[in-house]
Image (cartoon, rainbow, N blue to C red):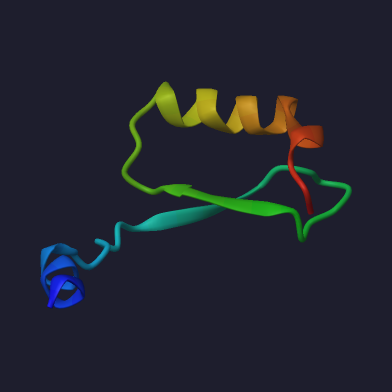
Length: 59
């Protein structure tokens, strides 16, 4: 069947290591996960951007 063929082509998602980052110290439950293997300065830039755009997220 077409559905069976479509499912065969799908791959299982890979699990990369992540770290939890608290983006709002006033609300410690507001954390996001980012790749643990990100290199600097990218990791710092992503965290800064997440904190700067905190109001963009629906909690």
